[in-house]
Image (cartoon, rainbow, N blue to C red; front, side, top):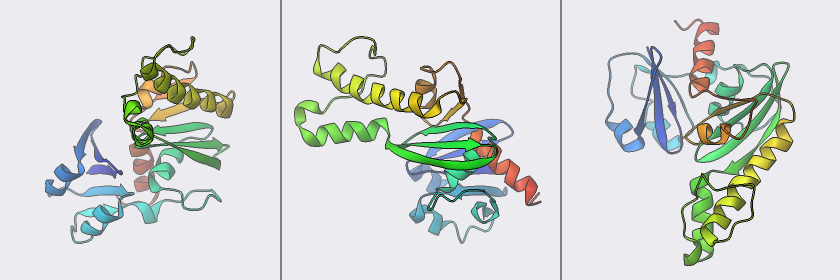
Length: 207
C-alpha cells in the first residue's frame, strides 16, 4: 500500500515510514501495480487518475467536523489527527487551522514564500530578490534584500504567535521546518497528512 498527497506543486508519497517527493511531471510518468490511496487538490491531475484503477481517491471517506466551506482535503487530512492545536502547512500557500476538542474552529490562508517573492518582483525589478530565511528579526534591516525578507518572515511569525496563543503548533510542508524554529511549542511532522490518511483508511475499513 502506498499513500500519495498530490498538491499544487508536487506529489508526496509515503510507504512503510518512508517519504519521497515527485514533481507533477515525474508523477505523470509514475506507475506501480500496488494499491495507491491518494488525496489531490489539483483538479487537472485528479481527472487523469480516474482511469488508473489501482489509484483510490480517499476524499469521499473522510468525516470531519467543521462548518468551514471549501476546505481542501489536504488540510482536512492534516487536521483530523490533531485533537487540540494549530496546524500550519507551509507550502505553495501557508494554511493555518485551529483544532479544539477535536473540532475545527476555522483557519486562514497566506501566500507561501515563493508567492511573496513573485509579488515583490511584480512591483519592481529592483524588488526581484530571493527571501533570506536567515534574516535577523531582532534589528531593523539596512538593505533592500533584508528589508523584503524581514517584512515577509516577521509578519508571518507574528501572525502565527498571535493566533496560536498557548496552543501547540504542528508544522508541515516544504517551509514548515524553517518556521518551526521560531516557536518553542512547535512540532515539525512531515507525515501529518499521511497519518490522517491512514486513520481514515482504518476507520473506513478499506484495508
